[in-house]
Length: 253
Image (cartoon, one colour):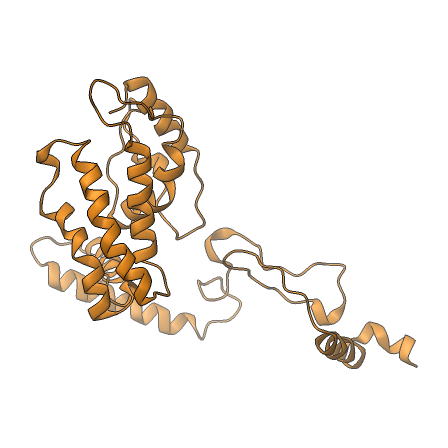
């Protein structure tokens, strides 16, 4: 669908994307040597790419008008498909939203049939039609997907050192890791993964010039939100500072 120059521009856009740690893989490592293909993505990375990146990344790269008889609704269709999976994989679901998704996915696949050849539509593409019904039966998708299992199996696979005895290698590595983890909880004055900052980033160190009650580390996660405290909460905050802060004692006396 895209010329090579457009593919290179899209891949350069993917290289520039920075995710929070643990959110997805580094897409820059999945770009081919000539910079025109994306390869080696895991299943979770494909979901992130479809739900979050492609709806924004394809803008400006795809022509809206039909070219050579090809439907010009590629960007809109890909964006609708990403929105479908984003709503389907959301943490909170409503019955009316799932019923709407059941109607939308049929129209989305019909639009895709006008763009891609019949060979594109295998059983995995058709499976999207049945996903809303499965959600109605099983509940939110995060309780049933296999990403945690796949990550754990990847850890076991990296622990295998003897291909002739894979089970023994995995069992020996698991026992060694369990033993080191147990010992690390009782070792003091030694840098372990339980007392050092994660992944070499500080982020939770206290501010040097702050008062005593705020001299503690905090690690923020997720998006920021603004919430105005009530008058009662402010009074409790002032009372706590006045009764627990050493710097306030001279003024209280």
